[in-house]
Structure formats: structure tokens, C-alpha cells
Length: 469
Image 1 (cartoon, helix red, strand yellow):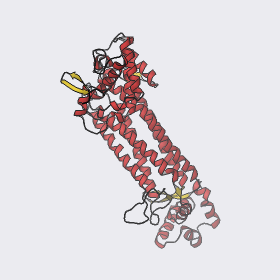
Image 2 (cartoon, helix red, strand yellow; image 1 turned 90 degrees about the vertical axis):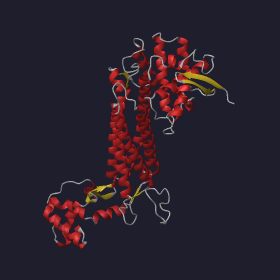
Image 3 (cartoon, one colour; image 1 turned 180 degrees about the vertical axis):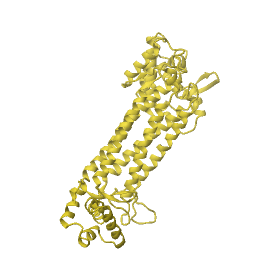
Image 4 (cartoon, one colour; image 1 turned 90 degrees about the horizontal axis):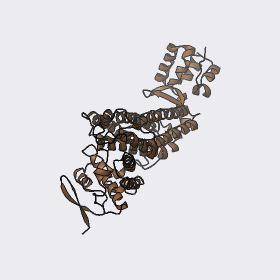
């Protein structure tokens, strides 16, 4: 039989396996919340952030005389071990849980308390020397410790996501340069429009990604305002004078980001507007990425009966019945990931709306939605870069021939022969299958071959200039 230790809370006693660093409240959480099967150990940045919060609180409490310096030292030691990732496996609470994150907060309190007890020469569970609530959670509530840690973790995770997202911008920009001289037909409403280059198309993808990177950076700044020291509802009950300011200063120094104390702790304790804005911005990015993937699937469609303007790297056989078929599986999987992120935006919206009075108890599902969305979309973007974008090639001749055989090029004749005559040519070309060149130059003799060559030179098609009669 494995040795155990007896722990108690006001609901009763439990035997806790002695090798575990978490205690009775975490044990109850594991029994109560088997929801996602994803424990917080899968979010190491969240665990690290919890360690930062507990360490900053201990240092601030020591400065304010709320806890003994030796106890503070033990808590700081335990927090440093948690920050270093040495006890990630001890964080077993499900990401989605009732209680506004209390189980996550107590998971951190218990683990740090037991690490600290061993540091002081005591056994796990000897909480009369170092207590999870009285010492590790001193001057705190779940209602300020959990959201502060969540904001820090989310800020750091967004840093990583934005770097990955920037890689997609670079990948599209490189293709834009590679394809800068590949003439193709632009389309609106899936109908021929006017000529452009494949490079312009891919450069536009890079530009739209760059715009969203800036929007994400702007939204990320909202996470820097935290409510540490608010305790239960923002009144600072049980916190010593000056504690909030000291704690936030320590926390900013430890994490290395410019955290600030909210000027209205009551408002900050209930408000989840930052998450709504960030998730909305992330949804916007997912919508754009998915639209681009739709384009890639269209542009590579065929190969004989579709657009066939570009070739996506062949990644796997595409059919169990149709030999030789290759599907655009990478854009497809990115599409599906984007759908998930778009759906999680509604989850965050509903969870934020469900807050009541002085607290929003739905923050755990907000955390789950945002953490998983950033993780999944980051993985999808990296997959899109590595397994698709960098390997795209252009069917140059096919693109050019489609332009010159298109009726859409008649638009360039508008300034020379007028809209009505151009429309007449387009109609005849569509009806007879003749080319615009044949009708306009050879049959109707509306312009000379020399003028035609000027209008439809590669340079003028790529960078159109106004050509007079």
C-alpha cells in the first residue's frame, strides 16, 4: 500500500497519496470536474503565471508585514520551482470547472505550500508550518489571483502566436516576390475581371495578415491591466495597506512585462471585456486565413477541369477509389481549425455576458476557449507555412493563356472605343468563341495592332496606365 497523509477541509477528511504535492481541494476538483480531459498541466504558461503571482504576493506580504520572512522565502522557493516547470505534472485540475477558477488557484496554493514545507524541513501536509490558504494565498482571492495569472499567460501565449502569424506574412510576401511577373486573370464573383499578377495576389495576402498582426498587438495591450490586490470583489478586504501596488510592481518585474494596477478594482474584478475584444480579433484573423485557404483551393483546382493556376505540394493520396487524385488537405485542415476558432468567439462572448454582479464565474471556459484557439490556430498556421505555402508553384503559361483568351481583357479597351462598343465585342466573343483581338483588331479594325500591343503589353497589364485614343 502506498503511504498516504490525511488532509482535511470543512467538508471532511481524505487520504492523499504521499507522493502528491497537491492536496485535498485539488483532489476534490479532480473528482468533480472530468469535463475536457485537459488538465492545466497542458498549459505550462498558465502554471508559470500562477507561480509568478504567488511569488509576487509573498514578497509583497513580507514587505507589508503580513507573513514571516522565512515563510515568504519558502513560498518564493516553491514558486520558483513551479515557474521553472519542475512540477507541471502536479497541476491536474480540468481547464473547465465550476467555482470561477478556485480549484486552479488552490492547486497552485497546495503545490507551492508542500514544496515550501520540504524546503523548510517539514513533511507534505504539515500545514501548521506553512498553509496553502493562510500563507500562500495570503492577501489574495481566486478572484484576483486567477484572472491575473490568466492575463499574464494569455499575454505570453499571444507573443508566441503573433510570431508564428508573422511567419505566415513573410511566407506570402516571399511568394509575392517570386510570382511578381506571373500574369493571370483577376476575378470578381468568380467571373473574369481584369488582369493582375499572381505576385500581386499573394502580396495582398501578406498585407491582410500584417494588418491583423497589428490589431492583435493592440488588443494584447489590454491584458496588461490587472486586479491583484482586489481580493474578493475589489474592496481589498484582508489585504494590508499598500499591498496591491507593491504586489503588481513585483509581478511586473518578475514577468518582465509592463503590468499595471487597475484604477478601479471593483470594475476590474467583474470585467471581461478584454477577452471579448481579443477573441473577436482572433476570430477576424481566423476568418481571413480561412478565406485565403478557400482561394488556394480554388486556384489549385483541377488539374484539368479547374483553375489550375497554382500547384499545391502533394502531401498524400487523395482518394481510396480514384487513382492519382491529390486533395488540398493542408488548406482543408486549416479551414476546419478556423471554424473552431470562430465558434470559440461565441463561447467567449456568452461567457463574458453571463457574468453577474461583482464576479464573472465563467472565466475558466473563457480560458479554455482562448488557450485552445491560440494553440490550434498557431499549429494550423505553421502547418500551412511548412507544408503548403513554401512549396506552391505557378503554372505560368496556363495563367498567361487564360488571360489572353479571356473576354475580360476587353475592359482595357473602354477608354479607347467606349463601353458600348466594348460590350458588343464581349458579347460577340462569348457567343462565337472568337478572341477579343480577332474581333477588335482584325474584323472591326477599331484599333491598330500597334495600339493593341501597347495596351496589352506585359508591363501595362501588370501596372495599368491610362491609355488615350
